[in-house]
Length: 406
Image (cartoon, rainbow, N blue to C red; front, side):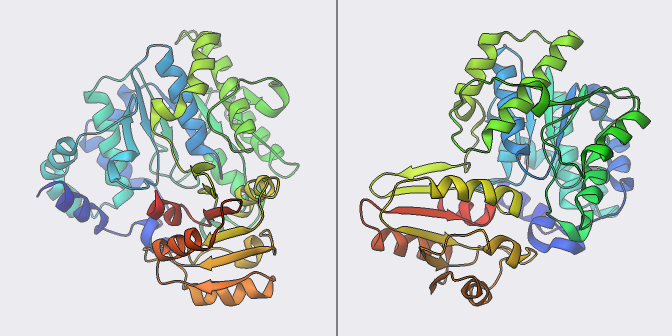
């Protein structure tokens, strides 16, 4: 198989959450442990930092990787989902895994994958760990796919566990209260391993404290401990908290004396995060006159911050290209959107993409009006045609919508 055929094969294996949602969820780590044993436990040969949370995982992981790169280390970065190409998920110092490594890994282990009916995510985690070991990274930043306790990445024993924040998302798997979701994310806290918490609420703090007490883990609440941070080229308002979280992670790393990171490394890492890691889609400005901004925020917690920032912008008319996936609580997110905008309703090219007709009908209940378009690109093109130089175009609602216009 060539690269495209290999990636297509991976995507077509047992359910992949990105496309199918609920049916892709496995309630245990048995397959991941089976695969790890088969690959000679690569995760045990890696120094890692494990990053969970409802929002900000990707930005936090990328900021941290960028700082460590500036400090001269060879840094593996595992994130999900990808925007354009599967290889974005697995990088070393900002460079994506090679097509040949992906092809060879799948080709070599394909019969094992098929015999044990491994999922897309399990195989991808195995690939990442195997690659990082073979390439002898100094440290790997591992982002949780979803939840924590039962996520395929949760076979690692990291130097530090990180939980960015807790919001209501993926409730059909993780529970429909903040406490229940916090419990799932806290599942990455390991015995005697320190944990950094980015943000907490009155509901989630006791959950974190209880788990940390059970595991004898030192716990650090970044929002209480860090006051000042450095500027970054990531311009979203929500990055303020991610920056504090990374600063606290660096403090703990310095205490462990495993890595040497200077203040200058941190400053440069923050400023060069896009160049160093390739992170994109976060309050990403794509044009001027009209100003065009896209953002991957896709749940209440993330969208509330992004839309507040959007309302602070100067513009004559606001155009919003909006598409979502079908497992979102529409009432919860649509209530956040401004009524004084013209909407371009669409659906991402994804099996979970919500029919734009349903989106339009529900949006109307919240005073949001606009037209339906056959694709994200058509909606985006129309918005660009309609917008005048002093207008603003925002594209969002789903990671997959943003992926189609980048």
